[in-house]
Amino acid sequence: MACPQKGLVLSDKINLKGYRVVELYMDNCTGCVNCALVCPDSAITVYREKKAKAV
Image (tube, rainbow, N blue to C red; front, side):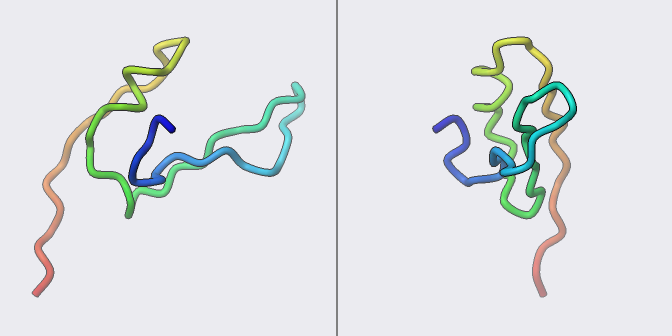
């Protein structure tokens, strides 16, 4: 699995071209960049932002 935090998941829905799309769950993303490293089309760019600390 490319995303150990399950931030990217294949959707059950199929788009007009017949492909399952990828859904992003930002709350799970840690910015580890694994998705960008394994993306065959280099279509993923990761921009890291600091998350607000829980109070």
